[in-house]
Picture 1 (spheres, rainbow, N blue to C red):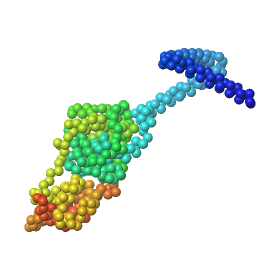
Picture 2 (picture 1 turned 90 degrees about the vertical axis):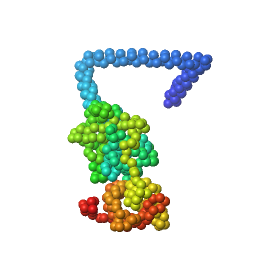
Picture 3 (picture 1 turned 135 degrees about the vertical axis):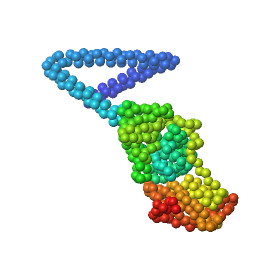
Picture 4 (picture 1 turned 30 degrees about the vertical axis):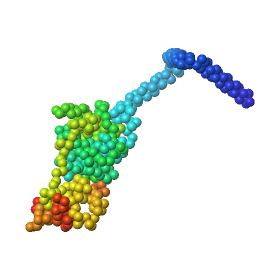
Length: 419
């Protein structure tokens, strides 16, 4: 045992001394080091390649000669050939499966977690006139369809967590059916990667809130296959798939298996759907093609009349412009509240729609009003109906809210909307 240990030590010592001498020759003289390094590297690389080629040639000759050395070897060769052929055919089957299920094999590796990303990042877009879906292309910019927010000056962005915000700015283009809603806060963790490259027949995923608030819970995720790129008359590229989109999913993302957005849910028919190119859309966000000229604006004048002041008050609540709404409270009213307490009454209101305003009986400063609210409570939309009176008072050049007598209407009849 001692002899073996001694031999190993001697061998390691000789190996170390050889390496030491090699390094010494390599660095001496030092100015030749770069030349030696390049020369030695090339030498050993060429030497390795030559040995590898010789080994491969020898292996090929051995494989060719092996079956003819004996009957036993011949039978073994047939068995090995069958196994190799089976493995080769299996590789084709696996490749075909990955292509059909994921587009190509590389997308199999990144598909894990895509469903969770979609459920946690696709948002609802809720307005007084329509509903849809959307997603972040920048950390403060949500893309949706224009027809989702048409005629709506203050749609709400509702997050999967149940929280909602009002956009601070809206731009869009009706002809392209694109709208972008900008948020005050930034949400970098919800931004989707965008790329419009898809393979033939590649599986794709469309995500959105099907049927809007009529169907609560997480977004609906539908799978299908990419069909083709289309170019309609407006020269705006569209993506065609075989997914059946339903109302409420408009504005949501069309992604590949990895969660990379390729298109924007736009139009669906039986067995056919079209999606706006998401990459082109993202590139237009900060260009003149998307602007606010076609966006509905809030236009109120509380100085015009008591009725207009009441409309302005509820319009500000609708738009979540709480400072403006608070400014329409009279000095007497403010003696019993403050901004924090007053705003806390409306934390769950998504939308306010004034149905009717008129002077109450023969008074000059009292307004009779009917209005509805949409409240977002526990990820569910609730409708409430109210009617009553507001007494107003002229202050600071406008009519302000003095006293209210508003009551909720539990089950309004059809005539309530028109009387």
